[in-house]
Image 1: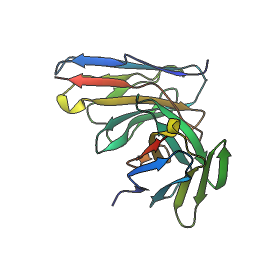
Image 2 (image 1 turned 180 degrees about the vertical axis):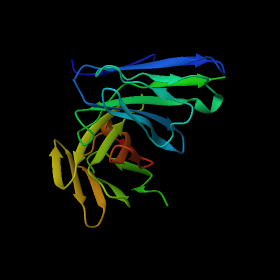
Image 3 (image 1 turned 45 degrees about the vertical axis):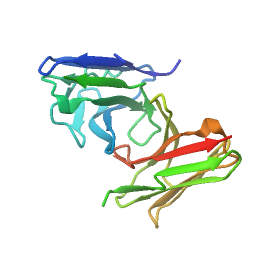
Length: 112
Length: 104
């Protein structure tokens, strides 16, 4: 089944404890991206990747890192999480940047 | 002013009604997406379009590039259509969403 898999679905952590949210797609898509969704602010793009080893900042990249060492995986790394990073996170992929987006199920992160 | 504006913010309809959700944008686009987010939180892509009109079942999406405006129509609405509908431009500029509730 074609899908984008995010893990974990829920995560509660403490300020400063490094964490990684994984994202994997099995559709051989070139383009992958990360978003956060907050009440009143909607969806905002964090980082995106047009291809392996190519990543770029979106609108809200501060406090996040990404890597794209293989086409299928695009992990989101929070080196030192802070409470303002409490949010619902989505990973998405598409064949290229002007193709329909396929979203993961989301990761609800709480930083205390 | 937001680069992507949706209206209305909230919409309540009776089952069977024809629904229209509007999206206006102020940036140049290569593609406009209509997304559906269900109460459980998952997001599904309904349409991606850069010109004209697309139809899938009871859903129709149109775009007018000159007027920088797109509409999502739902014909014969059903309670299972209840969701938040989000317009996105170039996959990185999002509208605030329209919360649709369809009552039986």
